[in-house]
Length: 284
Ligand code: FBP
Image 1: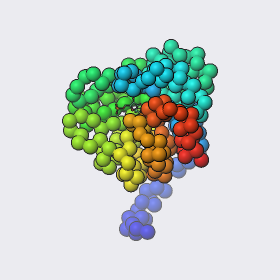
Image 2: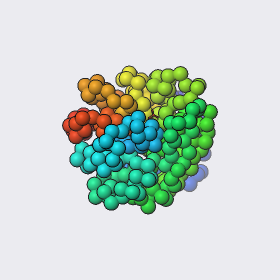
Image 3: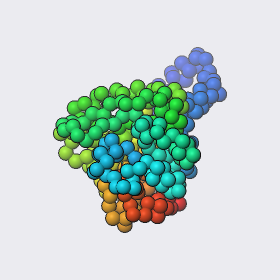
Image 4: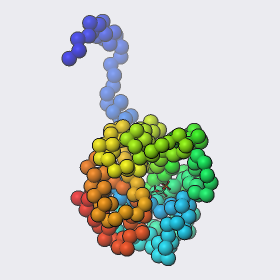
């Protein structure tokens, strides 16, 4: 132990002060931690979210076919595939409200978004408020920040306001943090994914969503960098099932709590089979 030459002096100062009431302090801390309710979207501390905001992010022609263009197909996969969350923009959440409610899958509403039609450093501004999300029965809200973009300050500030408001209402916040823009050379490098993870922690996100570059030790470092903010990983473009599932094992063994994926599930020929395999890896 480190010897403190001033220990005696410090003791005397503390003697004069009023004793700290630890029970009050504990109560305060408990109240604080009760503010955010993650239980709705976690299953044994793990998650499997089905992401379906690609219609806005990439456009229907790039990602969808005759089946998965229909939000009902996605809700059905989420329900039968045992997903712990379903990610929509507010429009789908509103128009398919009845089926989402019937599915009993917790809803995560993305509060910002953009199309991929604009070139240059990306910015995605807020399109839906926390209150609108609550009125649409959201169990959590999501927001994307493109760190490294020349417009990152807009997104950092909007995310901060959203986190403040959502947490007052006990709603968890999932931040998608993607390094992007001309200053970012490799968005999946160790440096970038850990920076993304740390951004989530520094802003107070409950969960941060990252892209995984395929190196387990880099993801382990990102998970460490995220501290008490939990890490989930995005799926990316459709891969062979074998490669994809091997990657998922590494993701879970690195300390991430799960996945928030889209294309590798709903573009699969057998979405329910792949969901079952994912469930086995993530929840055991
Ligand atoms: P996928 O599993 O299909 O990659 O979805 C994850 C996700 O984060 C989506 O929520 C989002 O629409 C998409 O990736 C954005 O990807 P990108 O910014 O690379 O175009």
